[in-house]
View 1 (cartoon, helix red, strand yellow):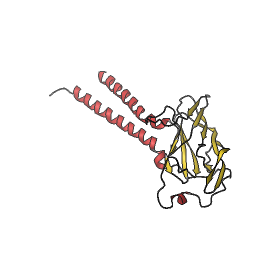
View 2 (view 1 turned 180 degrees about the vertical axis):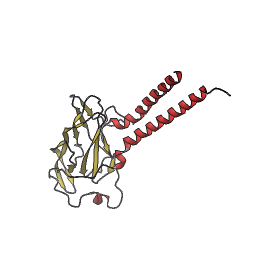
View 3 (view 1 turned 45 degrees about the vertical axis):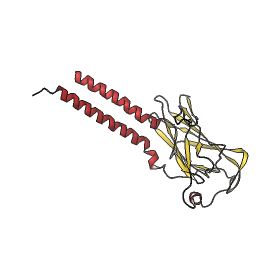
View 4 (view 1 turned 90 degrees about the vertical axis):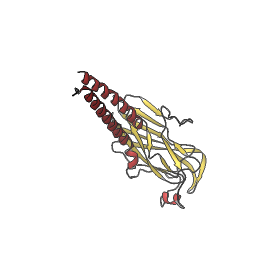
Length: 243
């Protein structure tokens, strides 16, 4: 019985350690992939995990940056969800290579579906032209649960490098590569700057992004199994009678 109690204690401690390593990678609303080139067009997925055991996520509201407005935004339909794209007038028109931009997407809301406990959903968006005068874009997001709770993922990155309690989804912008990086990323025929956003099909989210949380979880589980095996083996040797 002493051996059983020791093994159970080790298993409980290792499980807690594994959960601590895996959950931070799955807990927050994030953008996948987390970076894109300045001056181009990109497709990202807002990855939304459900953090509650007794409620489902029913609404996701993403606010787009007003200080760096995006001329072209289109969304990929998500089965079971309705999407509403809201445009607004800019305080000051922004000049782009396609003309003067007076209106831009300010908010995208997905509703009517459910993300059940223990599940996540990705909401894909194609957007551009990405600014060249900043290194990041912040997308404050509100996550509403069936219980009425609203989690506001809106905190900007901390200057000391530590993570905020409710960080906003962040897209890092890197310098463009190649002689014609902007042209390669832009669509062959761009719509007028004032055109309303359209719903368009997009490719699946990048494989590297979608597997990040799963890889961390499996890695933690493997570590737990290894630790348990070593400890059980050691306890077995201690119990073996001497010759």
